[in-house]
Image: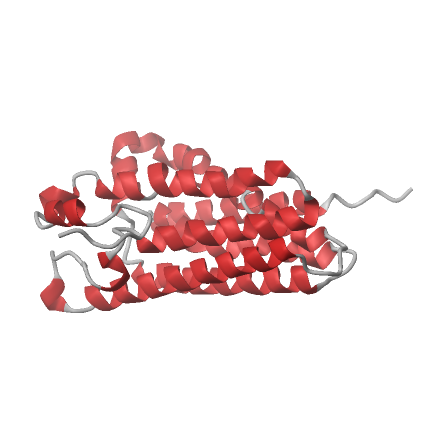
Length: 259
C-alpha cells in the first residue's frame, strides 16, 4: 500500500521547522540567536519553492510570484547578513532576562515561532503556486504592481540606510534624507506593501478571504512586535535628534515631511 505524500503546505511546515531546529543548534554553539533573522527570507521563499515543485502545473501567475519572492529573499538575506555583527541587542536583552533558561526558551520563543510564521505567512503565494488558472486577471496585475513597488521601496530604503551608516561622520546621527524624509521606516512600509500585493495575487488564484491574515499579520508584526514600536523605544536617549525627526516625519506611511 502506498502512503500519500503530505500536501505542499505540510511539506513547507516540515521544511520550516527543520530549518528552525538546525539554526537553534547553531545558535547554541555560537551564542547568537539573531542568526534566525538571516533565515527569514530564504525560509519563506523555500516554502513557496516547495509548493511550486509539487504543483500540478505552472502558469504566468505562479512564475511571476515565484520570481518576486525569490528576488526578495535573496536581497533581504544578503542585506541582513551584511549588517550582522554578533547578536543583536533585542536578542541579547532576552538572553540576559532569561539567563540559564534562554537555551530552551529561545527554541520556542524565537526559532519555532518563526518557523510557524515562515510556514503560514506565504499562504497567498502557495495559493498562487497551486492555482491551475492559466490567465492573469486584473487583480493579479494590481498585486504584481504593489509587490514590485514595495520590493523597490524596501530595497532603496535599505540601500540609503546602509550608505548612511557606512560614513563614520554619521555615527549617532539620524538619516532624514531620501525616502527617510517621508517615512521613519520606509523599509517596513515597502515590506508591508509587498505582502499586500502578494495577497491580491493569492486571492485572485484562490478567492479565499482568510488569506488576508497574511498581510495583516505582517503589518502588525512590523508595527508592534519586531519593527517600529520596539525599535523606537528609548531611541531618543541614544539619539537626541530623533525627537525632532519624530515630530517632522511620518512613522510608517510615506507623507510629505513637516517643517
